[in-house]
Length: 147
Length: 190
Image (cartoon, rainbow over all chains, first blue to last red; front, top):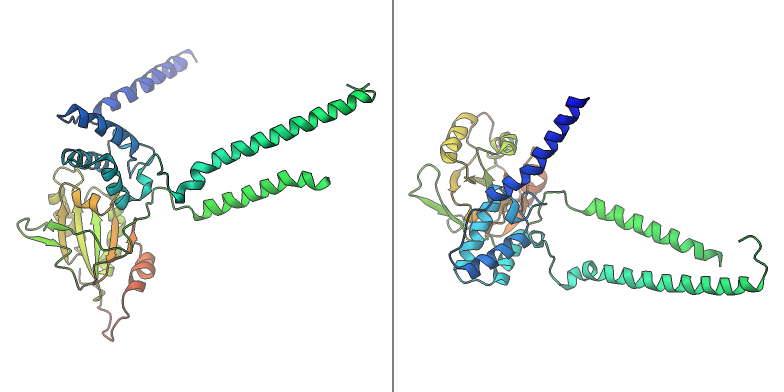
C-alpha cells in the first residue's frame, strides 16, 4: 500500500509538471515589432484550433495550428487589422474559429439570454419574497403554535 | 391557483424539448460546416507532386466537375477512405484531384508517392500543398476533406471527413448531372 501511494504521489508530481513543459514548446515564433507581437498574442488566444477544439491557436501544437499562426503573423506583417484577420478566418472556417462569438443579430439570443434569465430570476425572487412577507403578516394574526 | 404549479413543469418540458432538438441537430463534434459551400472556390494553384515545376489550379479546371481531396500519407483516416476513391475514379462525370497535404510531415511527398505506388492511384492529378496556405484558404481543418466543385467553379458540397461508398453515392454522385448512356467502366484497373 505504501509503495503504491508513493507511486501515485510521484505520478501526480509528474503530471503537475507536464503542462509547464508543453507550454514552452508550442510557439517559439516571435515577431520583430513588439506592438505586432502583442496583437499577435491576443489574436492567437482568441482563435480556436480548428482541429483540436478545446485549445486555442496559442496552446495547440497541431500542425494546422502552426500554419494558422504563421498565416496570422504574415497578415499582421502585411498591415492587416485584427478585424480583417478574424473576418478572413471566419470566411474560411466559420464563426466556430472564434472563442468569443461576434455581437450579431444571429447571436443575439446567445448574448441576451443570460441577461433575460437574470431579470426573470430577479422578478420571480421579488414576487416570492413579497408573497412570503404577505403570508407571514397573515400568520401573525392567527395562532402559530406549530412553528 | 392550482395551475401555477404547472409553470415549472412547463418550463422543464420546454427545456427538455429544446435540449433534445439541440442535441439532434447540432453538428458532430469536430466537424466544421464550411461557409464556402455554395460559393466560388477560392482561387488555388499548386505544384504537381510528380513535377513541382508544373502547376495546376482552379483556372485550368473551370468547365469540369472535380473533387478536390485533401489527404496525406501521415493520415490514417485517408487510408480508410482510399478504397472508396479507387472505386469512385471510374465515374466518367467527375475527376478526383488529390492534394498531398504536407502539414509539417518531413518527407511527406516521397511517402505520398510511395503510398500511391503501393495502394493505387485514384487521382487524375496529384498536387501538393507544401506550406498549408491553400488548406487555410479553403478552410481545411483536418484530413481527409473533400470538395465537390461544379463546372462554374462553385463548391456544391464539402465532405469534412472520410468518404464512404454511401457518402459517395448520396452526396457526390447525386449532385452530378445524370449519367449518359455510356456503361459504367469495369473494375480492376488499379
